[in-house]
Image (cartoon, rainbow, N blue to C red):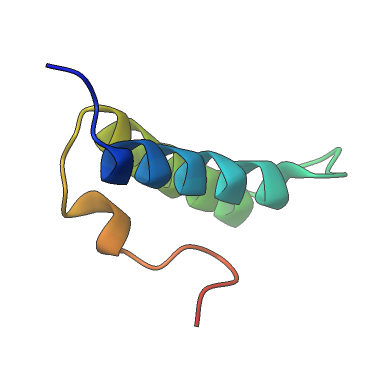
Length: 62
């Protein structure tokens, strides 16, 4: 089954959140690694087509 536009947008949004979070970083604290892992989980869920995954707030979303 081809991905839907919503699925593609969810994946793109999650991917962009990861890119923004890692931009310019050289070292990582445990908390920052945990946040990166959380963002990666959202991205993976979006890629798997789980519609509720993008509902979690991404950095920069109010």
